[in-house]
Length: 280
Image (tube, rainbow, N blue to C red; front, side, top):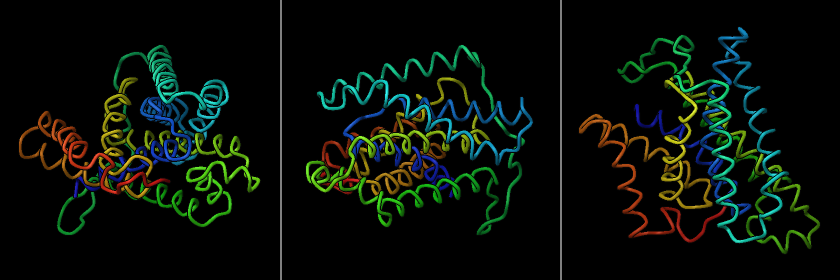
């Protein structure tokens, strides 16, 4: 149960990563750091400005999405047509910038919101931390809402068209540039929301996103690069595996098992569980 609850939050950031990759073929290294930034902003809004946690849930993803728009407009848009290594190195540079700006603002200390959503509830005979349960429900609601948007709305279908056949999308009158802007904003906004949801569960610092972001990459490799459903399934599997192995063998072995599973998938099924280049 703890693994599933943790995996739900992993799913949110992994879905954001896969959405960006599926549409733009950009591996966004900065997404994890935007998660950490979102968590630190949530702590600041709640503790320093005395705003309700609910306000942070709505405000921080908008700030993260705005940062994503700036990243795309100033950097990604100019190099997206080049080799993938260019965008990979560019997002790595953006990641370092976000980390160091966060260090300048918040320092190297740890922060959290343990007083928010404190306590536990009984579920199926188990005491479940309220923070993890609420974070799981909100993360899955957000991820499924974005999936519904992609599947059912006109603009969501335009995003899928750009992902699957960009040349035909242009012929059909779809603005690829507009779709890319919205996609990048959605992906970074999901990372910001994941950070807000993790703030009550973990002690976070400016480099927290590095530790979580690398697990998100393991998730999308296991689920399938570019596959939105694959990211959700992979995140739940990773969450269960990490918690179970951590309980049985210790946290260090639990974390190692995540990457061992990633290596096994890369060796035996490189395209991931949902296989052959499934897209957003």
